[in-house]
Image 1 (cartoon, rainbow, N blue to C red):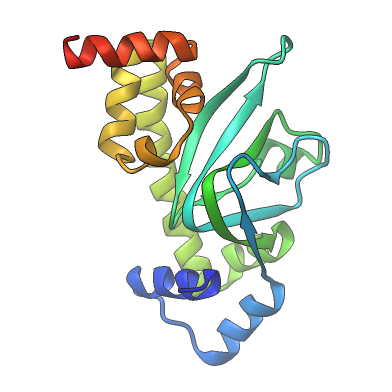
Image 2 (cartoon, rainbow, N blue to C red; image 1 turned 135 degrees about the vertical axis):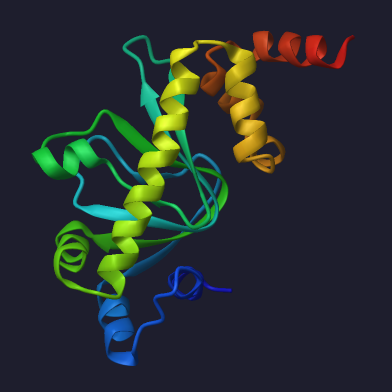
Length: 195
């Protein structure tokens, strides 16, 4: 299925099938993309003006520390919307980049279009409002997990929420999310397996 087809299917899954005219309006404002592993979908060197619907694969927020080390702070799986909220709203540079984890297909929609739909449209706007609530629930669980500062709790979060991510993500990316080095992640896995 193509990226726009995945978006339309997600709309229908939430009970928002759109008429042809409403769907054409979305398609006119959408850009479909494909990205290989570690490719940047939204960068932090430009002010963000778009939102990304992950159609297939995984994306992640990637924060680069002053020493150059990178940490993945949040994952977005197929069906999730992603964006640099602080950059989009403040019209300032963002702190994170959105990167592909494995191969990703996605749909990019301009912020102003999405905002207008959110505020006024009953079909697509109501869908976006539901997705925001879903994201807030996910982010609360993620904040609790990250506040524990426990690699085991973070690993369980990934294992419970995104088990297939463990198969496609680079070990260094999982390690970054857990807050350990790649070597520490290897030791962590050995301890979990009892070897």
